[in-house]
Image (cartoon, rainbow, N blue to C red; front, top):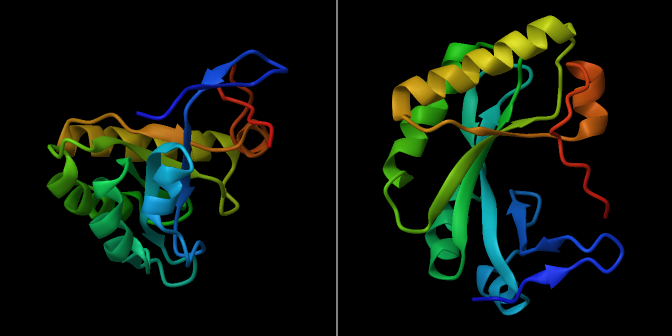
Length: 166
């Protein structure tokens, strides 16, 4: 097990990890583990912003085949609230179910980083609708992965969003 790290400015204790998608083309889980990572969240997929068709991340199969040998693994889906919520929830559930009982599986996040032009109340309702549907279908309540700078504008301020400094 990797050591815990202490942020000398805040005194917070944390473990190293990250999120990986097709954009990190050369990512290697063995190298990440050797550098002290304990976990990774892999992008499962998203929904096309034009066509509204769900798709798997181009590197998901490659990443999910390698990562569990080195790290605890969670999954995430890049959510678009201006597209069919049921379609996204169904896609997520069908691709999430095979991993739920794996010893390395640590959870699922709904990545909420775009509003697609929907107003805050609609954004909140559609996000909740997707979360509820996933929980009903697979018995797992997802977390929301977002940035406070986005969420505070797109939905409204809430006290529990972590504000990461990098």
